[in-house]
Amino acid sequence: MGRIVALTGNDAVGTAMKQINPDVVAAFPITPQTELMHKFAEFHADGDVDTEFVLVESEHSAMSACVGAAAAGARTMTATSAQGLALMWEILYVAASCRLPIVMPVVNRALNAPLNIHCDHSDTMGARDCGWIQIYSENTQEAYDNVIQGVPIGEREDVLLPVMVTLDGFILSHTLERVELLDEGQVGGVTGEYRQAHSLLDTEHPVTYGPVDLPDYYFEHKRQQVLAMERAKESIVEVGRAFGELTGREYGLFESYWLDDAEVGMVALGSTAGTAKEAVDRLRAEGKRVGLLKLRVFRPFPYEELAEVLGGLKVVGVFDRAISFGAYGGALFSEVRSALFGVEGGPEVVNYMYGLGGRNISVEQIAGVFEQLGRIVETGRVEQMIRYLGVRE
Amino acid sequence: MSKQKGWKEIPIGGVIVEAGNAEGYETGSWRTYRPVIDYEKCIHCLQCWIYCPDSAVLVEGGKHVGFDLEHCKGCGICAAECPPKVRAIEMVLESEFAQKEEVLEISNSKFQIPN
Image 1 (tube, rainbow over the protein chains, first blue to last red):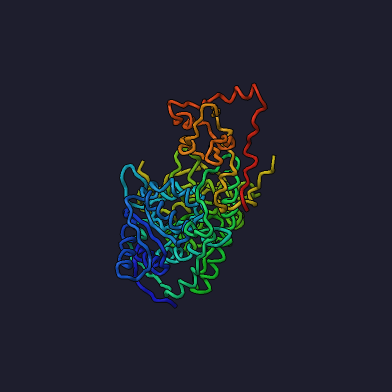
Image 2: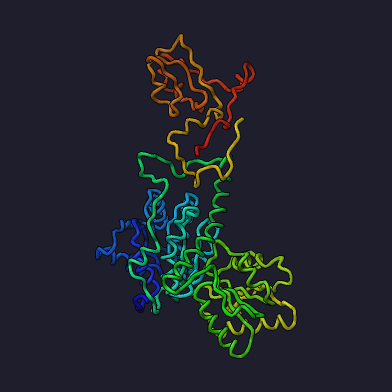
């Protein structure tokens, strides 16, 4: 068993970065990510890492510096939140399209306006289609573990995609939790060596990154990214299994919690899954057949695997912590419902928008949702497909 | 026309692994005006060769011998830089050539992406 300490989410992820010891980190501070980079800067100042630490003037520059470093073959990391991620937007696509396996913790925070520094998933949900792998964390231990696993997941030769690892702003980033740390040697064993095939600095074999790609070949390169995302699924499962052998904490594409004999299920991302587990425990104690699917990997979306687990349920409630304005429900809802469409006798799927701008979600609220979902089972009728949980009327 | 490669056959990420292969990409088809030189007037000062942004002025033995029409985009810098007393280069609409002579066959099909 590793060393057990009490750390905030930011400190734990900063520690993971120290143990990964990346070649290059380029970053700009933004709440609630700031302390994460403070922590890493401390390690850097103390000489605990060999990292070239690049302090830039914006997140657009941070991601641009990361792209340059990664193209040169460096193991590269950064971290951000909300507006910072939004400012990176253009370069997020460049990183993914150039197939650079940068690892970036994102401390989830609501997007302005009005100005809000607290947790929701509108930042990373907005970036869901830019070609990055997205891994969500339920608690600080998972955030720590996921960041370390992000390195080999993205660097696998047939994947080569950047990886976002998310943790809920303040709820995880600023809360002390029990964390079991790996030692440096173990982390090195998980991450391994990274040797990039085509380095920008290899003057013996000069290459060009990001050239013009007109209608005759652009589509082919996008098709390659689709395959890489499919392969990422295998990479995530393999790395998660090996991590389990090492630590006893095995990771997959999602976690099934009391779903085997459940009639009513819930799907959630991030820390809300922890709250939901408590609600499920209470209802199970009363003999209610309820369960939870905690989605860990949103990109690549594990639609086949998810349909297999949820297909036999009667009703599924999907929790979205971000609104896709004008869309038919949240992004997670759309994906889950789409995955279950065509499953014969499949469940009714309904949507709950919740927790925007850090609005708290309680065990009681989730238990109440399970009650509502139970009524759909009884009546066979969905009265309202999309609900807003916890908003004042 | 040579066959274009499929998505499984090309390097990932749009990375170009063969240095200098832009030469294989024929940009001459973008041209609206074609430079035409009058060797009766040309003094072979090679100002046009210096200024050409596409290295499309062909020189042999210190003399201007023609234009590389597979890469000349017709920007007209050569004609503008030709000394005022010489004025040996004239920019002529491509459509006039199309009427007079065989259309210059330029396509992107020769562009080969390396393995």
